[in-house]
Image (cartoon, rainbow, N blue to C red; front, side, top):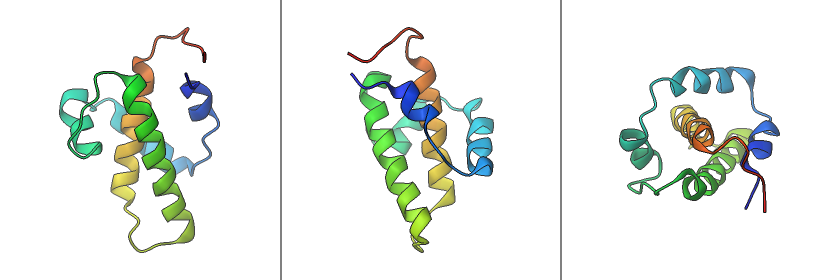
Length: 97
């Protein structure tokens, strides 16, 4: 199993982007929002959704860094909100296998 907490701790993103995501975490509802963020799928637990969210966030970050016109700030914030929210659902003591 991947250590998702250390992956998120190592995330280096603009402060304003992370701050916007932290504000949105309060309003995140897994049953409503995760399906939209993951394009129609709602995995049963954070262990299944986190790898997909991490991959999508990395793709968005690369798009942002190269200055691609297809970059969506709103989408990036939505994915970060879902990523942080799903991470909070993991048990505190969960360690990589």
